[in-house]
Length: 495
Ligand SMILES: NC(=O)C1=CN([C@@H]2O[C@H](COP(=O)(O)OP(=O)(O)OC[C@H]3O[C@@H](n4cnc5c(N)ncnc54)[C@H](O)[C@@H]3O)[C@@H](O)[C@H]2O)[C@@H](O)CC1
Ligand SMILES: [K+]
Image 1: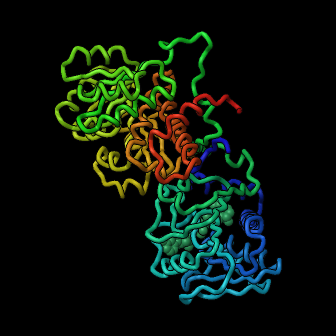
Image 2: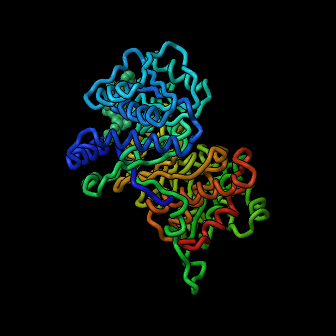
Image 3: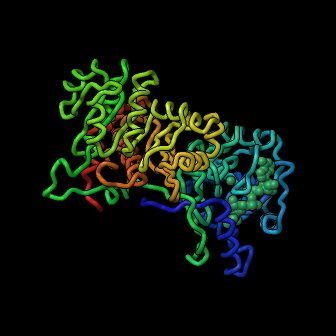
C-alpha cells in the first residue's frame, strides 16, 4: 500500500453533500454503502449463515439496514438488534429500515442477550458519534465482545471518534472496518488502532470533483513508499558529504542510550558521528562500536564547543539526565544555534525551562513528555493526538514527532503526517534513542526537519516491523533494528 491522504469528519460531510447533489438522489450513497459492506462481508466470511446486525439511530444504522436487506435477499438468517432508544431518526435511515422490514426482515429490541449468530455487523454509530455511549450501549458492546464472534464495523467501530481517534471507555473491537467515501484520520492513530482491525475503503463512486477543495487533514505514510523518500548517494561521495551528527547524553548509569542513538545515526547513513558523554562511558563505547567518535564532555569544556561547531545536527537527550551536567549540555546546545533533535531528558528540561529553539529543530516526545511540555496529562492528550502534536509544533515553532501507535508528525507549516507502520514490540526502553539517531542522521544528510522526522519515523517503524518478523514482537530489542535500518536504507526505489 502506498501513502494516502486522510480526512477530518467535517471534510467527509462536505464531500458527501457534494456527491449527493451530483447524484441527484439522496439515498444513493447509503444504498452503495450497504451494498459494499455486504460484499465485504461475503468476501471475508462467505460461510456466515446467521447474521446479526446491530443498528443505531442515525445513518450508520441506515447502512446496517441496507446490508441486512441484502443478506436477507441472499437467503441468510438475519436479525437486526437495536437499543430501545435507537429507533431510526432521519429520513434515510427510516426508509432503509422500512425497506428491510417490507422485505420480511425482523427487528428486536436488545434485551440483554444476543441472538445466536455467526457474525456481528456493527452499525450502531459512525462519524456522528459524540461523547460517551449510554449504559445500555456499553452493555451491548460488552456482549458483542464476549460473544467472540467476527465483527465487521461499518465506517467506524462504534464508540471510536473518527476525527481524533479517541475511544470511549467501551467500544466495538472489529476484525475489519469498511470505511465509506474517504479514509478518516482518527482511525489510524492511538487507541483506535486496537479497534479497527483490517481497514477497507469503499469510495461509493466519488469523483475528484466531489473531493475538490477539501484538503486532507493528514498524510498516511506507508513502508512501500519509504525508499523513494530517502536521500541517495552518488558514486563519488565521501564521508563529509553525508552529514555529521553529534550525539549528546548518557549521564552516569545511562550510557547505553546515547550509544544506541549514535549507532542508529550511522546505520541510517550519517557520514560522521560524534558522541559527547561522561568520561566513564568512553572506553566501553569505543570497544563496542569503534566507528563512533566518543569523547568526554563537561560544561564550559572547549571540546564541547568544538564538537558543537563541527556538527550539522545535534541529537540531544538520550540518557542526558536533568542534573547539572545534563543542564549544561542542554544550554550549550541551545546556545549553539544548531538544528537539534530533542528527546527524553532534553524534552523534560525544555518543559522545565521553556524557551525559543533554533531553526530546524525536531522534538520527539512520547505522550508523557508531550503532556509535560503542554502542561496537561497524558490521558487527556491521547484523546486528540493530532491536536496535541499541532499545539506543540506551534508553541515551539518546531517539528514534533508524537510517538506511540500511529506516530503523528506535525509541522508548524505543513499538513501532519501519520506513520502507518510499527508494532507493539517497539514499546520497550531504548526504541526512542534509536529513533532520535535516525531522525538526526537523515536531517544531517540533507532532508528538511519535517522530512527527516517523518521518513525517519517511518524508517524506524519499518525496521521494527522487519525485525519483529524474525520471532515476533515480544522481546524485540532496539539493537535488533540496526541491521534492518541498514537494509531498508539500501532498498532501491521501486524494488
Ligand atoms: N457521511 C457520509 O458520507 C455517508 C454516511 N453514511 C453513513 O452515515 C454515518 C453518519 O450518519 P449520522 O450523521 O446520522 O451519524 P451516526 O449514525 O454515526 O450517529 C448519529 C446518531 O447517533 C446518536 N449518537 C451520537 N453519539 C451518541 C452517544 N454518545 N450516545 C447515544 N447516541 C449517540 C446521534 O444522536 C444520532 O442519532 C456514517 O458514519 C456512515 O455510516 C453512509 O450512509 C454513506 C455516506
Ligand atoms: K459502526
